[in-house]
Image (spheres, rainbow, N blue to C red):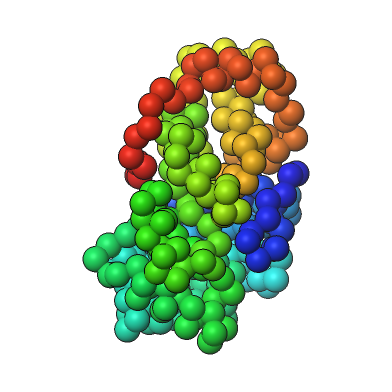
Length: 275
């Protein structure tokens, strides 16, 4: 599996695991925990969650899945924008740590921008780093103008921008992603198969069949072929995790990449989207 490098030199496998919409049905809990553990076994050690997901239930599920294996995992969680102030971020972080059953986060993200000034959020994040509660911090759903303001507000330690990025959401390639690459800030790509909608895309299915892959694998392999991009697909079953992991072993030829560009290439800049 390819690696990506964070600005502080930390190297991570370029394929992780997402948890959005997990822990929403008790009947799926055992399968979801087994899927996360299988992912760790297969080298997908970046696990992304958020206090928003299931009102903390996803963090609790992740905590159960990684019990006894904390040191094998690069653990990411996200804070609500209303909790991104100097007074509320420490409490939000402590609550996430408690639900996850750990004493620190490897990466803590501002989930999206709200009314709290970015400079205040940066200061609160850096205080958590100093206290050892988090090892590094980043953001999610911030477009280029927001990122410029973040850096100008003292946010030079930002480790990543987690954004909606997939074959059908390629607008960031025209402005935000080049800006991030210039500053060696990697992208974490959420909803890499567009919440499953890409699986029903007829042209993608045809290209995938020629490449002897599933549509999901081709969509993930395309993201993995982009420099500095770490997709975080959710997989609720062991079989789905194994399918995702196999995508990291695909090498896409120039003909396949050209076909995908012909179908999905963005034609003009557009504002960053979010789900």
